[in-house]
Image (cartoon, rainbow, N blue to C red; front, side, top):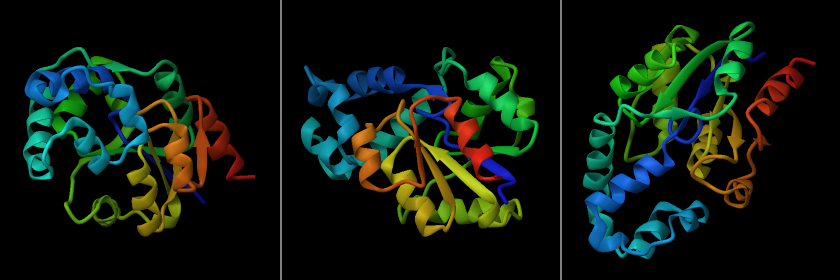
Length: 206
């Protein structure tokens, strides 16, 4: 039985695509001039770097730079219906967030939108060896049985990670990866609207 619903943050709860796009252009304009950023929704990380002509060795520092600059952005918007969805889910489930974004960034945004009280925890973490390790650490820290959690994310790597961690997953199509790219990894569930998530978790208990 599912007891916890854990969300990714960027691209799932928060609509940060344009913010990150602007930061990448500002930081790496020499590579990103005239680039079609919508096309990256069908790319993996290596494909994106190749299209942007950015060397792979720049990736760790690039990710650090973008994440640190997100701290200065106070205008993070949530996707439509997200607050309604979270309030509905909170009635029957414990909610959490797992993200590579900083905990401070996430909590500031949640407070701004008056939804910080809806979450049991906000877990920030990343690993060069794979997100599945971060998921396992999250479960260990909060004493969560992997069989009792479902993870909601917007990238194909979320699907891969949850399968390795033996956690059910819901892939959302309004984030950083396209529906086509998400489908290739065969998620447990794939949804096109926020409130479909509510339908999925309700079906799990029938």
